[in-house]
Length: 494
Image 1 (tube, rainbow, N blue to C red):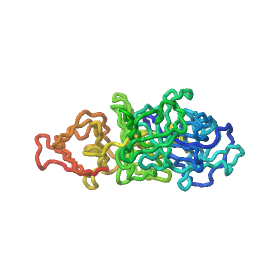
Image 2 (spheres, rainbow, N blue to C red):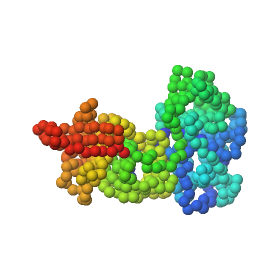
Image 3 (cartoon, rainbow, N blue to C red):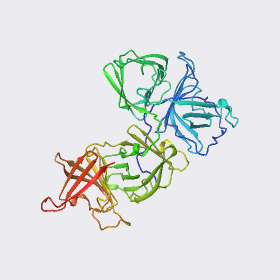
Image 4 (cartoon, rainbow, N blue to C red):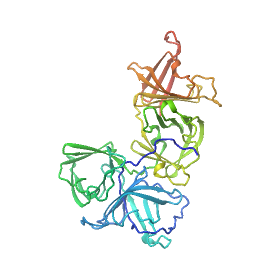
């Protein structure tokens, strides 16, 4: 089966929250929802309904992690069922069966760690969590728990610390009832470390100065969080970054657990996976409803047949499912998106998470997630597609990246994409320089699948960017540049 041969996503810092149901032992099956097409897109920040002065909340992240917090007795610091649970999860897209594995569990008998069968789905905007607590094989009315979404708005929502290791958890959430939650777990995952755990309290922000003040209700992460004496200021930038200034330090948090329905406009553009200097893995979604995937992995001296490009048509289905409708061109072997498997998409800020059901069990598991970052789209940077009618080739693309490299893709108009045109169907990836006067100069060749016929046959090249239009001019005369021997091609930003 085809699968992405990429660096797998490891657990990232995420934000959190939620809980309900006891961690009792048992394995009896529960009844499943009757709907033939249920909404299993549970990514989001949810707070349990009807809990009054208690705390019960959960965050399901698009990277396959969740954080659950629970305090059942207000002001009781030693509450044995109060605290934090952090782990990974997967959900069956057909049945809603929820499977979890705990990384850190310090909330007694509460949460999702009890070995019971859980079912989760979204109905009319609410998260419904079902658990057969009495193990009688059915879901009784008192075994269904409803959660309302805490929608991101200003400081409201859940946030993850931007600069932290993948095996640590540092997050803060601000709820719309003037309460906050802070969670922290270090890489050792020790439940006996007093600094690992949950802090819950109330907060207020001075509208004039942005000074943040807090009062604690429950605190099991002593020495961390927002309970230590300090002067703090909180501000939100572009609704995506939370800046906490604490005395002489500044901390940046990014939104997490944002539930959103993906649309083509959100997807549009160039997304890149973090790889080595000699590797290039990107996904580009174009305005015409097609996608382009590039794959260059492994050191230059030992690259295999799974490198190259793939181009096809896609559509978005319910629950953020990515459907590949047609593969038009494919020369990257067993890599890419050309296999008929279940895939999902999530976008949080500038991060795209692609889920691929590689073992074909209708569940996206934590080791089947791939994370891409949105490439900059300014000046020449970003993804550009030649206008229809500009060239005989069916697809011509430039992708300029922030590391002073670019890839150039051409696919001939007619099958079987044989030799005979220049450049050939395929991709070349190079370093480049672009001077202030628009002179475009090739640098080191990093990869080529065009048989050596690429942009290097031009004597001189110029690029001019005007907003969302890029004009490429290539001069073919090898002796001198003349005003009438340039080939102009207009590209549109995607």
